[in-house]
Length: 111
Length: 117
Image (tube, rainbow over all chains, first blue to last red; front, side):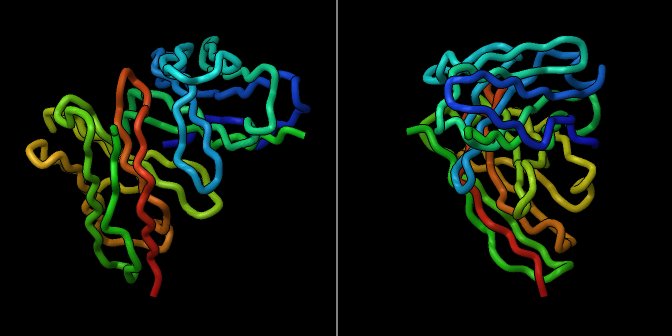
């Protein structure tokens, strides 16, 4: 299965906002609201940041928000902080055989 | 504490087999679907396999279908991944992951698999 498409990298300064996109098809993102986002600091365990497109788990900062339009999902991080520097992955349910598919990942650099 | 702990990784020759295990604690294991995810060195997360609570819905990524087998033992709170015909490209950190409300909310720390001669 082809991975969902994310930008390889994004960068911004502390305090700014960024949006990471995740593009798929009608078989995954466009067809279902089962999109989630993960923060992964190298050497640590991935952390769930957003589920079901827009929902934040308990304990996740409200600086993180999610949305979807058509076949593209997005996650916005506002008020960037140095600790937000990490890799971010989207994940979507897919009607194809695998059931789930990840995006290729986006490296966020907080300058 | 809710946790997943993987084991069984190691060094194996190409064409060999390994069986990964994932021990769950702190939650009702039988009430959740589970998954395996891996990350090869320098690469992104790759979804591998899914198993539902009743084990009557099992899925695989194309990259491992026919070589890997996922299973679970609800009585022993354990998830497994039998990996056969291993290739160099299967070298990765393997994570056991809980599925809740359509999000992967609990991740194990991973177990490293290295396929090399």
